[in-house]
Length: 432
Ligand code: UGA
Image 1 (cartoon, rainbow, N blue to C red):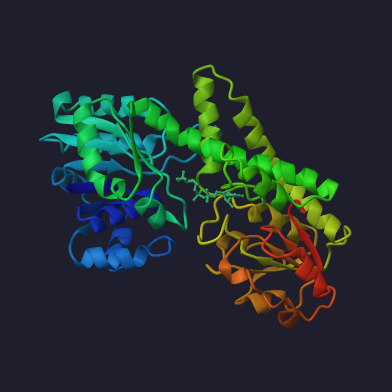
Image 2: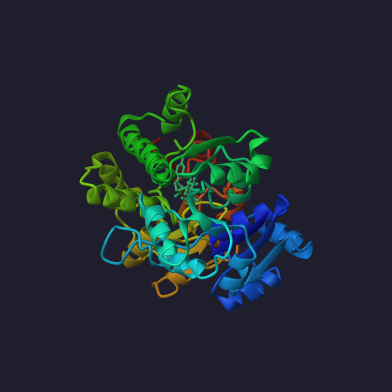
């Protein structure tokens, strides 16, 4: 099939590249000329394991192309995916849909024969109705169908998640597009992905409700971990104990810092805002947002306690600053609160991240990037393991650290407390 992806961010680029790898002809469109020229040279704008290889392979065999010309690209395609950003509006919790609507307007100028317009951007319920309205100002309704097909890709695991999804959700009010999309996704369905057809509005809500539910699960285990810390229980036992109940499930029960990233914080707020619009009180989601907002302060306080409230001039090594492992994404990472807090209190911070130094910390006092784990921890009083990169899972603390009284604060519960204590170091984890 001939596909066009509008927007080469996470969703558009990963989905476009994967669709081309499944044998479709795909054009990825973006306004940003530099980005498009770079992509043609195989330079990828985001850190995503495996993506570069797939771009090079499919660009070389000409199933994948890049363009800044939206009109021409839409004309050549049977299916057009809208994959633009829906950030939180300034001074409000609702999603800014201006890029989605601008894309719809542009698409409407190039429809001469039947096309399916798929919205893959994360959008509030009824956005599809609005897209349909915008396009129908220029195009007769029999020449297009607007579909919602949300994505469930995780950063760092996006290619795997695309190829082996738990489910493919297609929200459409007509059976013709359902049929065409089932065919498009058939290589994934034959490998075991469930195909779910719903009404368009339902698909839009499935996306938000999924993210809000996962955020709730994480927040729940994070709060239980606070109780574990007070009662001498290891949260890992609790996560296993409750996760074995199939009704609960074991995934997304890893206690840690506040959840971050480009999706959960933004989407939970947007869901509450949509519900407000429809006069519905989502009190659970509201509590989740509040609890997560407060979590970074709680962890900052714990760091202070670990250092006996003597933070000034302490050397703190921070391992991993992104919102999670296998990404270079800093959006809503709890390090953006923890590192400024420590810097303000007079600590000397040496941070290391496998994806390099970060502009967010450039102007902070006493915060510097280290080129290796060893360099970061050799003079440290306290090591904070903030993300769960494999690189951090078997550090030889004895060899790397000159400090016999080293303290380790393992925010991802990677290490066995017993083993670290055996080495003679103090160990703190989350909920243990
Ligand atoms: C999330 C969803 O998992 C995807 O299904 C969805 O498609 C995506 O948002 C999106 O809407 O685009 P992502 O933000 O990439 O994906 O990352 P996750 O792996 O879900 O992690 C989000 C945050 O939760 C991170 O801060 C992570 O450290 C935290 N987390 C996750 C935990 O603290 N504990 C867990 O058990 C799992």
